[in-house]
Image (cartoon, rainbow, N blue to C red):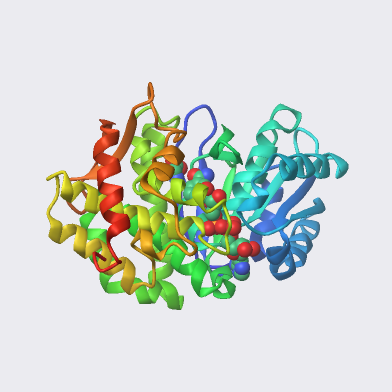
Length: 376
Ligand code: NAD
Ligand code: GLY
């Protein structure tokens, strides 16, 4: 049996589940899926992941006695759309997925969010299994039950909370991931240290190369992140409070994704998050909340890992301060029109800051846009 680490997510109402983390876990996906019950398991994936792992996953499901099927979408953020959601839902129905069957999300965060949302709404809710194949999805998006698609009004604005029954994070699948996507996922890894675990950020500074290289540090990092996320999700599943901390860097990051039209050739989610993390720390320093030294340390580490940390690094530009503010206006944390940011008093000391003055944000963004990148 493949060695794996297990993180339990102890949600109430019989909704608790395990996150299994280890190399080679995909080979056990069939048996694990069959143990959840049902007669069929239909995979939702994207074309890139289908070519790499689709046949192996289907063979495992069939060998475990499950009728299998596969629905593949175009890779990239553009698939978190109404049109693709409709195609996936119809595809699952064409495969005769019933209430007791299983939807298997095999892929990155795009597939997880899309397949999870389709599972949440198909026949008013069918069970689903997350098999994340990007670093970002293994440390963040496959855990916690947020599912959804984008609207022209903004990111993730159409969605549902729908928890998976199991998360199978086969960390060997990251061996085929591009360097760019590894780096993008690493922004979310570093985020956990920045939110509430300064010791983990120190560990990241010392061990990030091992995560990229596929050493034992990789599984360890995924487990640490999943443990942190599981804790937050169990305490605040519906994001009435603490869960918003997971959005550190995301108010800026989501706005950047929106002004770059969700075009993955320009900016992928994790790159937006990396710039957002650096901005959140520089904004905190500007407001006198945290030391400039901490902001510098955050940007330096992300840059060392190959991530962008300034607005000047957005390919094709990102518009002016007003365009960015406009893109933030539909952030899910907006309350009565006022912006809420996740700010920091230092590394590992993030907090929710409601009612941030738009003029203050505009002035900050204008200065960042004037900078030539040397602030990183
Ligand atoms: P992604 O799903 O687009 O995957 C990135 C690229 O990697 C794709 O082109 C994909 O085909 C390819 N790929 C995936 N696995 C591969 C593998 N093993 N080998 C080779 N190529 C592979 O992007 P992502 O970064 O995984 O996810 C980003 C999405 O996740 C965003 O839409 C974001 O909003 C969402 N997200 C959701 C949550 C949540 O809680 N639900 C949290 C964070 C992010
Ligand atoms: N990534 C944000 C959340 O799961 O809440």
